[in-house]
Amino acid sequence: MTGGSRGIGRACCEALAAQGATVVVNYVKGEAAAREVAEGIATKGGKADVQGFDVSDSKAVDAAIDGIVKRHGKIDILVANAGISIDGLLLRLKDEDLDRLWTSNVRGAIACARAASRGMMRARWGRIIFMSSVVAEMGNAGQTAYAATKAALIGAAKSIAREYASRNVTANVVAPGYIDTDMTSGMTAEQREQLVKIIPLGRTGTAPDVAAACVYLASEEAGYVTGQVLRVNGGMHV
Image (cartoon, rainbow, N blue to C red; front, side):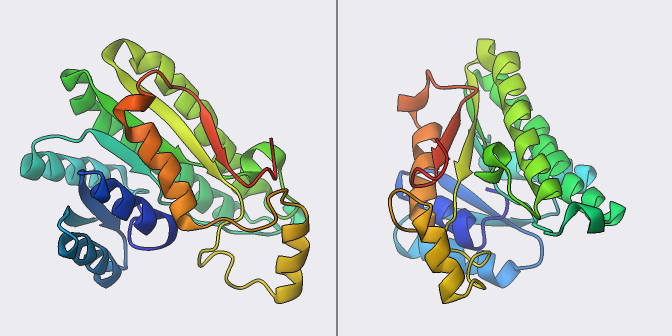
């Protein structure tokens, strides 16, 4: 689980561990938070490990995946959740910000999928899950670059799904809407009120809402689901 130390990533780690998966919690800077997640899982009888690496560094990704396989024998499920958000109007978009977004959100996810899929292909079983966003499909003012990176993950997953289907490896996307995490905590009460008005279910989502989608796509029951986008957005975009 890349980006597993907080928010949606943490909820996914906890939910997958509750289903019996041995979870490897990835972090870049938040080692203490990652260890807290792993310890919490262990306290509940689950199994968890931590692994620090930056998904934007392809060599670090390859080395980390190799190390995880050596420690645990294989990787069955990859949830590529790590990513960054840099918002701003198009006319003010800086090249360096666009490069950072692309490197972290797209190249990082693809690098992780490339590394993890080698063992999945040999085992003829695997689950690759990319974490996208509602803005990938509906757009949002001030998020041109971010939305583009999240939309790219949908195209990547659909292509991987076709490429690896014969090896029983599925590739899918979870596209959350507005979820109560650190990314939305800075909203004012007025902003939140206006936001809720455009969500048919009348509330923002929670990290466990998204984690439930990941658990399903990682399960045996989802073995005939590949190349799909599972939208967890309260009906905001359908």
